[in-house]
Length: 418
Image (cartoon, rainbow, N blue to C red):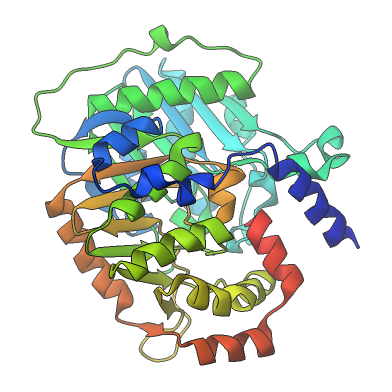
């Protein structure tokens, strides 16, 4: 009964949230309008970025993250969805406190569900409130309070963004949280994920704009954008667009609607509504190759929810779907948590946004679209390695999995709750 009440509350809430209408809008599938024009029309922010440092292993990103904090001179801005401490992350959090003690302004936004982490991190985590005692300005986005518990629908709006800005010159975006399973479990044991680090004052400035807005909406302690200096750079760069939360549906619709040859997606928890499915189906019907390489989160509710929706995902979209769960020897691989889309071996989409209904409507997200055939080529090679142990799913196999392991309530929870 409580699941039904929660779903009904969420349905009411969805009426006032970001819509997926863009996925069926003719303006985003128009072939006489460029991708750049479409991204500008939905609110994409033009930026210039060089080739990034790419981290596919959380242990390596943790090491680099700590170095950046230790090198900071003026300010550090951080957002994360799940943030918690464990012994492996001690050096990073001590570095943040030491930075604050030497006069670096450290502002940190974590989502209010961080202390309710349901991943493997729950066995190791310590909440991050201790950072405040060390001089870090820490605030929670939409904290879980008694007032919110009286209205369960409000709990569903979460800040899923992950970003880092250091001194107005260095910026990072991606999918990794600041917890044990994302960064602390050790090389080869962390979730399969990604972070992208750019020496880009342009991107750093745009992310700082975004951060100030998020902070002032979440905290009683207000900050001014002019207090965070921006830098300049002469580095060779390529064109990109920073996509704020409300622009994410239009961004995906623009790129899929403009595809001429191929779309490669890593969709985590791919629960799509009818409009999203129609957009993908339209691309497939035009002869576009659409490949989805996806994990199955083997935590009970997530797996049964994914299996329930899998047959419709295949039938309604016509996409080729591959499951990446087990390795060469039958071992369970670390969960593929990476967010990635590559269109026509040219446009790369990275950031926090999953390709699912929740990220389109109920989560606060960030994405970055980069127009770079060279980066796309590099990431296609990465995708091939991921796909080495991915198994294609037929409709018949999907039907069997739904019958044997699917659950409609779990699917509804996955669809709205992620």
